[in-house]
Amino acid sequence: MKAVIFDMDGVIVDTMDLHYKAGARVLKESGKDITADDLREFDATRVSEVFSKMLSNKTPAEIEGLVAKKYAYLLQKTKGIKPIPGFLEFFYRVRGKYKIGLVSSSYIDFLENILRELDIGKDFGAVVGGDSVAKGKPHPQGYLKAAKMLKVKPRDCLVVEDSINGIAAAKAAGMKCIAVTNTYGRNFLLDADLIVDSLADIDEKMIGGLFGP
Image (cartoon, rainbow, N blue to C red; front, side, top):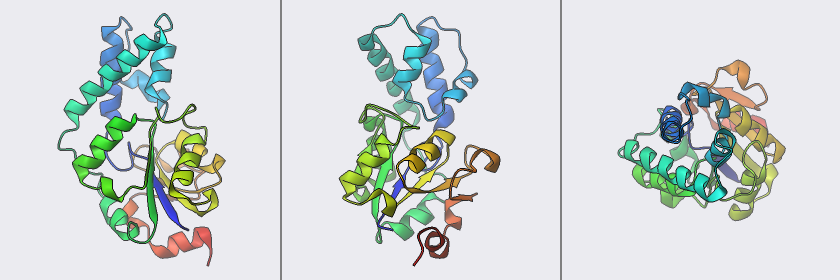
């Protein structure tokens, strides 16, 4: 193993509900009667794709304007945000040993802002957002791009995910994947190579079991 690549929302920070609420607010302002709970089925889907589906009468430029508004709302709510318990314990164990990357459906400006809030941005050699690729999760493009940026082979990467689409993307990229039950129960994460309840539970023996000697 040469690299660890994290998802953001639901792995590093607990922002999923904030995403749903901000998205629902923008959609309501655009005349779409929808709740935050209605958006849960689009977990790990790029917001531009969700808005385009919900607001089919809007042009691509109008959709991007609404996406920007959504992230403006979101940034107001994430100032001073704290990491999910267990993340930093694992992160501090791996950052000096392996290359570190980030792949998320969230837009890159938002990702970089969160990394600044947590004061860990300098440790990431690759940050890939939903607006950095043509195809979002479950397509593997984001993870493959991160591996290329880190100059490692996909088979030498460990992905840390929390969602069904994220796991599918990692596996399609040919990477090992650990899923954490921050967002979904174990029954939804069975395609991962390993499932944990907290990233703090992961040790070198577990990682060695995935990659071998």
